[in-house]
Amino acid sequence: AQSVTQPDIHITVSEGASLELRCNYSYGATPYLFWYVQSPGQGLQLLLKYFSGDTLVQGIKGFEAEFKRSQSSFNLRKPSVHWSDAAEYFCAVGPSGGYNKLIFGAGTRLAVHP
Amino acid sequence: DTAVSQTPKYLVTQMGNDKSIKCEQNLGHDTMYWYKQDSKKFLKIMFSYNNKELIINETVPNRFSPKSPDKAHLNLHINSLELGDSAVYFCASSTTGGEAFFGQGTRLTVV
Image (cartoon, rainbow over all chains, first blue to last red; front, side, top):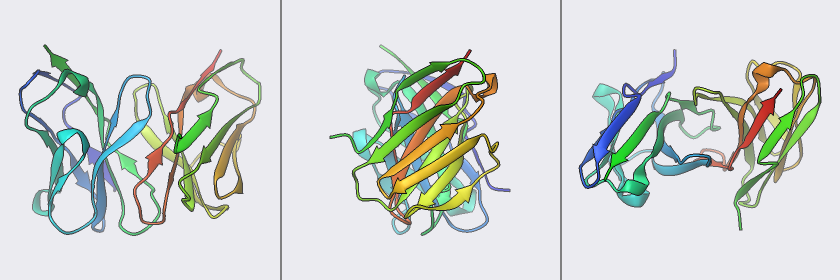
């Protein structure tokens, strides 16, 4: 079955600390992988995506993610978190080259302490 | 200029009513989607249209009917609203094989 697991429901970090949000997926074929961020009361904003090529991808707002095929993981990282990064983060997978029937993880809520 | 825009942003209505949510994208994309986010923030696809043709239709009650008058618009009509329909509904668009861009969402509350 196709699924996305985000093991951490809530994460709290101090401002300036590093961050890693975990994402594991189960998918029949090689998927496209995405991270979206949702600020309170807002829509979903694409942070970054992996389609092919270099397994370390850079996104907006200083985020990066690494695709590890052997571990079926696509973890999101940021070296130094800002208070404005507090939001809900969603990992998603979709069919490569096809229509975006995205399968989302349950999300990780990030809180940032000053 | 908003890329994917939905109206209304908030919708409060009584059980049994019929309501519509409109979505428009100005990105020139050929594929549009409706996603539902429930109270636990879980997101699930409902429908997808490619060039006005329905291509994805998940297990959704037939009280929900999408309509795509053209490539840039995808509306969602809901008949006989139920309490369980309360959720945030997101419209999205993409090129075929490209990433999806989402609207701001419509928070539907059925009372």
